[in-house]
Image (cartoon, rainbow, N blue to C red):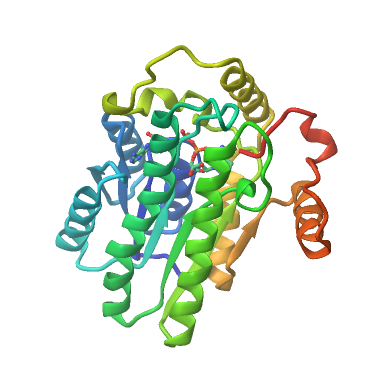
Length: 289
Ligand SMILES: NC(=O)c1ccc[n+]([C@@H]2O[C@H](COP(=O)([O-])OP(=O)(O)OC[C@H]3O[C@@H](n4cnc5c(N)ncnc54)[C@H](O)[C@@H]3O)[C@@H](O)[C@H]2O)c1
């Protein structure tokens, strides 16, 4: 997709952070927006701001962890605009701690949103994109945690590795059938967003049954620190737009995390035990978020 004017763009996790920045960047190019988020008030706020800026916006309260809600999102988009051209499966949450101590609720929540949310997005929207037979694109948000497995972040790392693997398979499948559906995977470094406050989006059914462990607190503090120094999400949104325009799959961090990624790949290639390698400016305990 080269031109976003009047194209219909769906963004999940659109009420905050990277999703909100993506919505702004697409709106600035004349796209018609479909914004999805589990946080109704923030979603309405984002929709109002974007409408005030002149954008056409449909806001649909959606929990991406539920296939029926993602199906309803697609139906609403098609009913309103008659087409979907770009889908950003971006909603995500974070919980950390030692892998053997993390409560099952934390694993479930992170995997429900970060992995199942993207699975639902792919299952629902790819058939819609294929049926349209025009140039379309799907962007799945992973992280540098998709290629590096830092300590204290096992569930998040697993979730992001899964998003990257799903996206790579999807890319091959669509390429093999000559589909006009591009795929990109967003793997950002630390970005200044609301991710460290994501506990407030946790569903009651997966509420923590005990206070956070010392490991969870350390992981949360490291995330908070990393995000405080993080990049402006608007920078990431521009990277995403450029990747869609160029039909480029990997949207990688541009800092030292790439070198850490090389170290990891060398560990695998050479059969070495895993090296704990994070960029010098990320600090010893900081995890890729
Ligand atoms: N911030 C970073 O440093 C960073 C780095 C790499 C990857 N990411 C990824 O970027 C994506 C966006 O996160 P962000 O950093 O902008 O955080 P954020 O918390 O600012 O935004 C995430 C949005 O997702 C929404 N959300 C949470 N659960 C949801 C659900 N079940 N259904 C629908 N919406 C839901 C939240 O309400 C929020 O508006 C996530 O997938 C995250 O893992 C973030």
